[in-house]
Amino acid sequence: MTDPLVTSMGSTAKQDNEERGATEVARDTDNGGNKEIMDNVNRKPQFHNFSSEEWCAKWENKTALWHLEELHPVLEKHADKMIAGREGIRILVPFCGKDIGMKWLADMNHEVVGVEFSELAIKDFFADHELTYTCEDLPRNGGKLFTACDIKIRIYCCDFYQSKQYIVTRFDAVWDRGGLTAANRTDHRRYADTVVSLICEDCRYLLVVFEYDDTLYSGPPSNINETTVFDLYKDKFSIEKIDSNDAMNERRKRWGVDCVNEVVYLMH
Ligand SMILES: C[S@@+](CC[C@H](N)C(=O)[O-])C[C@H]1O[C@@H](n2cnc3c(N)ncnc32)[C@H](O)[C@@H]1O
Image (cartoon, rainbow, N blue to C red):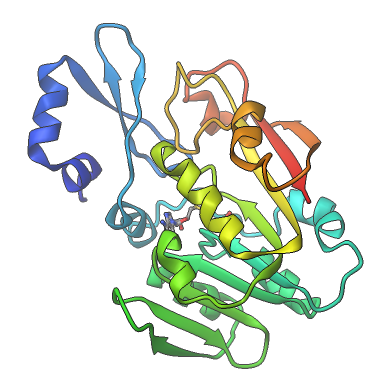
């Protein structure tokens, strides 16, 4: 199996970590059994940036542990607030993976557009739902566009941060579970700016994040607290925290944190 540290950081960076006394600690995380780097001196986790190759490897190695085989409960509970009675709206799903929610929203006759690095995840999505599709090359950077034949779903296989050059649609809604939280910490501003560049004035954005003590665990998913959400989005949206649930489970206990909350924001 590919060593994610070597793949993205190169052997020199890996040696650097070893030289400053860091140890790789294998953990079964939401990130799919990733190796986290712990600093031996102060035992604080080091944040690691993920490359497209590492994300794609998770789909290939079947370690995409975040994927839910059923509709995400937050979407089921709060989709009406995002849709707000509108019919046939255009919904953006950044970092979509093969989220079942895309099919659920399209079945309500909305137009769904996902963006995802992994071609395997996209092909799996269409296969899982027995949807036929067409595939075309995007003009630059080797991306592809997958379009379902009988339902309004399009998935761009490309880097989300590059997607504005292909996507002319401006969206009425954003469904974001596992998007902002999966973005590298250094990309949070770029992520928010990309979302904002793709939306209409009256867009309603349903965002799910995790809150936990990130001095004990580095993610992903990233710890995204209220301050971060407001810093990223207050200039564009009014922001409401609409739900918060205890999200601790057996797997997350291994993060070494006392509590994990799943927090839901509605922005409009
Ligand atoms: C944690 S998963 C969440 C998937 C989905 N939203 C869900 O809830 O099931 C994050 C996904 O984003 C994809 N991804 C990460 N960075 C990306 C980027 N810059 N552009 C496009 N996709 C990206 C990964 O390949 C992965 O499938």
